[in-house]
Amino acid sequence: MADRRAFLSVSAAAAVAGPLLGDSEPAAAGDRARPRPQAPDRVLRDVLREIDPARIERTVRRLAAFHTRHTLSVQDDPERGIGAARDWIFEQMQGYAAASGGRMTVERQSFVQPVSSRIPEPTTITNVIATLRGDTAPDRIYVLTGHYDSRVTDVMDATSYAPGADDDASGVAVAMELARVLATRRTEATLVFAAVAGEEQGLYGSAHLAQAYRDAGADVQGMFSNDIVGTGDAHDGSRPDPRTVRLFVEGVPTSETAQQATVRQSVGGENDGPSRQLGRFVRDVAANPQTGMDVRVIWRRDRYLRGSDHISFLQRGYPAARFTEPRENFRLQHQDVRVEDGVQYGDLPEFCDFRYIARVARVNAAALWSLAQAPGTPKGVVIDTRQLTNATTLRWQRGTEPDLAGYQVLWRETTSPDWTHVADVGDVDTVTVDISKDNVFFGVRAVDRDGHRSPVAAPLPSG
Ligand SMILES: [Zn+2]
Image (cartoon, rainbow, N blue to C red; front, top):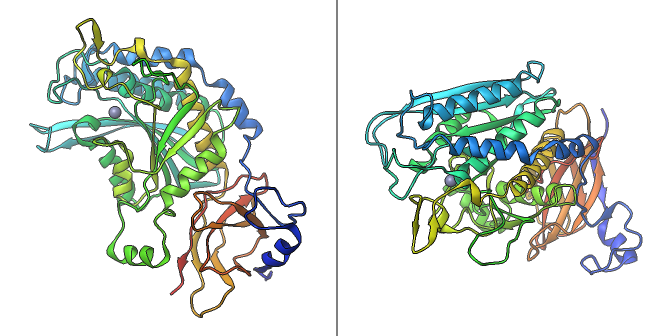
């Protein structure tokens, strides 16, 4: 059996190449260097080009035309209400799946939500879910959602005109467009594109979806809620920001147990939870000229007073994050459609920028494709703490991906927001680095033969 241990002498290299944390790139970095963004591969560049703003516009306008998609609205009228919207989304998704060679399946995941907050009587809630089964790692899953329910000023008003164009036909349009474009591609891991309901009443649809994965023991390694991704122009006189999307990522995990908190406090892991690593990954693969976007990562779970479907996944221990537009106009959300003192209120399609939504879809495509084609996030990563030493030994479980090439160790000063150093350590499952674990943060990621990298896993103390 091959030797799966490596030794990395960083301080010796640094003495030759200059200070580790200087501003200039070391001239002779050898097997260690500054982390670089991951450029889109050839297939991903094709995918990004195929994302079509005109289709996204048709989706948003069609969804807005159901009059209301309120969770408590009528479910058996073919023209109006959430039932009509549900059936239309299902038919569209089935059409995309027809081009997938049987790899994409579409289901209506229905359940009855009992009487609960904002649900006055037992109500059937339905998520429409398109699952693109992976070729080589089908049990590893990444989920994208938009919510197709809508609302007006009174969250219990199920009959008034509630076009919900930005909130959240825009996110549903992202999910549907990516289902369409990716249905014809083979992915290594499984991708899920879901239109969920019950969001405005209390995240009920996504809670059911996340719980179903939890009950099945599913290995969901990343989830993104696209909620209010309609425009970079807040229509409030502020300067438009059409090349930015925000990504909200929590620090301390929502699902953290008391025991996990004790470990986190001892190692200073507040900024290294799995969702933070997912946020770093998205910037790394999706903020580039091919998507035409910058990803403004925000280190909080969500905006003040607001939430979205990623929280359902965070509560069940899955890494998750939320995309949303750079600056919101609250006159255009959760409002009765009306004109007051010459000012238009309400979530109308005319306030959406469909090319902006297409760019947000490209960011999501870059993130999902890069996750699905890379090895999974390394598991069982520990930092050896059995004895006091100024060196650092990291261990992990070697992945089973057929195209796995090896691993990289990353590190940064404890005060640095993002990884500043990376070193290839080869196809090993143990590495000793001559840097003290007391002074920096370490992480480990896997790399395949095409250069796709996994998200980083932060080590736990081996105990
Ligand atoms: Zn929303």
